[in-house]
Image (cartoon, rainbow, N blue to C red; front, top):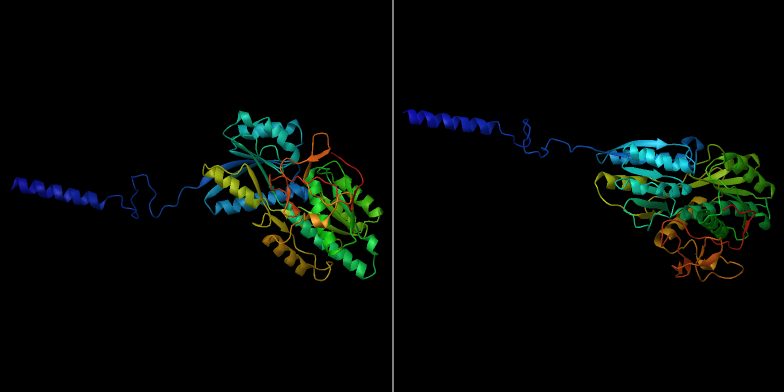
Length: 417
């Protein structure tokens, strides 16, 4: 009888323990360490540093990066990745950039993004001291093949957007010719350029080719200001170009002053980095910009998951990394929206190449060999041939632009290397 009672007691204890076990989906914690069916995976947090040459008040270049930062943060949150940003504004292309990279690394940033072309040399002075930190130089070219595991370059095919903005400008000038407002030889574009670097040359050449494709008599004058972000000098350059008879102003510079100056001088404008219609509604037709959110999301997600990511990244309109802002329908030429849709489709399917060598000449000759700038500023044959299949293939061998030729129809009023 005692044996039977002991056996019965043991059976009751076993059944009780089974009833209290950590079944997945029960209210009792699972002691196995695996998430239960009702538990959400723990969110990941990545600390990211962003070094900016300006601040969001420029309503141009740095503002565009901040827009990308915010959009990427939202997209990553939906994936369970929280981003802790540490942003440093108004950093110079000098030793203060080196200091900023060190400070962010010391603060525990796992990823540090440098947003200006001139930042990379100072970033590279720091990277070896912080091998566990990933460093990105946007719009640059020194890190893409330096053999380091923690350096990266990133850019987008902004020349595609420039070409489309040129279409908008060219259609407006052709409308002015057709209406008798200007003569064909007065279809002159004034372009405010920061520096005579390949990035700027590539952009304004693409822009000009877009304009010329719909306004064959178009010509261009370029004024370099020797700075990425100097609102006063950008405005002064735009005014000087208007005084020279330019009826259309565009820019590769960071501020809205070329737009407001164009409006004050009674000429038209296309912008960069931001929709500038709000500051110049009677002048600004459209803008093009890089949408950095796609790249930020890609790189930060890789860091969050402990994965490698491209050392040299480049995309364009193929994934929305290059976009046009809304067209100013109040002043754009009739049929512009339809023409843009046609050209975008041709770019997408490859039937149109921006730098089609049959559409431009250099010194009256068709380009048959690719060229690059050497350290002395002279043109020399490019080791990696970029001209094939009847076109110069920009950003094909590296993300950073390398089209650095002065084509016929574009007059450089000065140079600022």
